[in-house]
Image (tube, rainbow, N blue to C red; front, side, top):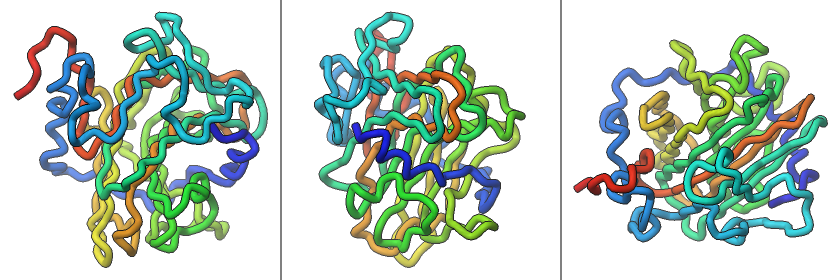
Length: 305
């Protein structure tokens, strides 16, 4: 886990209503949802052995040794919890907590040794019953990084060879959405548009009719997909599912200019720009793969063929 000082570089990231891509009306095979890898492994038992799986974390090991940038001397903004009401399955979950302040964050980072052109990240998450970020926050990201120090870079347009990233994040819409807000993507890519003030802040991709609202105090299965484009073509994609239902699918994106830049990072992040209270969120049952994962199947159910 990187220090809070390192996270302060994100303070320029502001969700602005620019360059919104429309949700596709015909998402094709993505609409299937439901029948992903997890259907073959009830309770996720053995799912880590599937050849399509890159990373699995159920927070049952008792430490964060499988994550990168772990600092054992850092304040406990990230910790393991075992209270049954804070855990989705098994005996443990990860709690990310931020105290009141300006530009405060907590995170877990996983870098993949080999990058991929298409990556799916499924995780279960729950917002505290009193969660309220005000308006602006940043949440779970998938990223392609030329080097790890590109993570959290803001206010600058990628050049096509250095990085691209997208975060699935809730947005309050200046208080019009109930906390924690409506979900959508916040993305950096080579063809992104600048803010009217000049800098390049993340461009939003979000469904508006109806907005995808999430509630506090309940677990959600969230999954996001990031597909890189072929160099020279605008055929990149991103999509997200909530509880196995496709909620947003966006195509025609030029993320990069070289196929050497591949998706190689999962970043579980709780970052709030102007935090007025203690806020907490929990993560559990993380699976990263090159195929759609889907919700955990019930133990005792027959594995899918």
